[in-house]
Image (cartoon, rainbow, N blue to C red; front, side, top):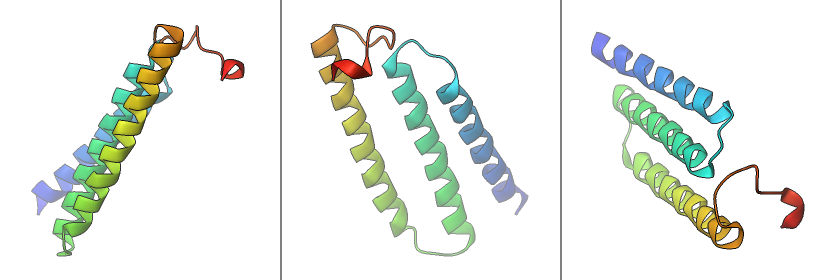
Amino acid sequence: MANIFFMFYLSVVMFMFGCLVFVSNRKHLLSTLLSLEYMVLSLFIFLLFYLMFMNYEVYFSMFFLTFCVCEGVLGLSILVSMIRTHGNDYFQSFSILQC
């Protein structure tokens, strides 16, 4: 029982560290996308242990992973299109008014 609460606590701490990295000032879009994927992974761990603790079906975790993969692919496609148009993934060289 204590092991499950430790995993809950660990996933919440992982999510908070992911949020901290996400809101910090980063120069590259790739590091921001990686921190978002880290946050999604911590939410998946939290969801999985929550569903197992409450004795629910864990099929919802597969839907969650499907949407997470779609979110990751969308982020990578935006990154690739930004690199093709601007030449790099620095936030300083990207202006929202150019799009």
